[in-house]
Length: 223
Image 1 (cartoon, rainbow, N blue to C red):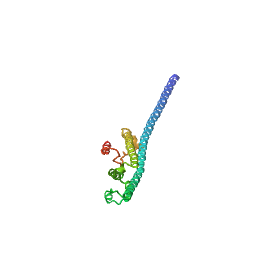
Image 2: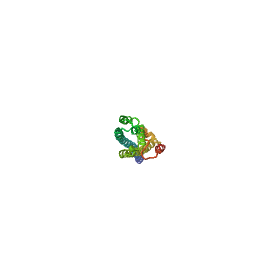
Image 3: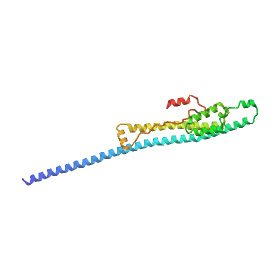
Image 4: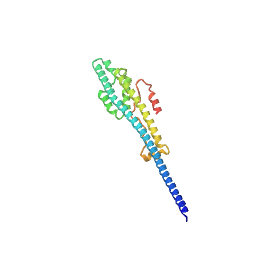
């Protein structure tokens, strides 16, 4: 074998070795880039789900805050009604007119009204209905400035609860859609994201002062 032949063989071997190294490097770089793309996609998807879930959590806290404001207003309403009943008792207590006594309204006792505040924790809507029935029967109570002011505040809070409940359910819907859409559902399950429940309002006041009595039914139909 001549020296030139040996040199040519060595050149071919070196060339193949260089090509093989270039191929390995290309494969390593391509794999690294693909891994980075996959990792970036997972991170972006994870962050988007965290943001959507946090939106739902924030919306839930806003509902709870509005519900708490409503619960804080209710004792004021009970106190105002109790004061009104006590005043009416005093007015009728000062007369000896039997006819006036016979026309005296059958007020619930102050103790009964105060008990409403406690029972409202379990069934706010039922207790509120009793107070509104009392107000409808005795216009002086319904038209009193204190009663009207508290009812307007409660009405505003109830509207706020309704709007925030819609916002929360919309946020939950966006989040749920993201974790259930294929192929994201598999990745969401792998990352530990679970479904958030839709909000069901408990003890919702079903009547507002100055509204059509059919209003609550219309609201219920919109749910």
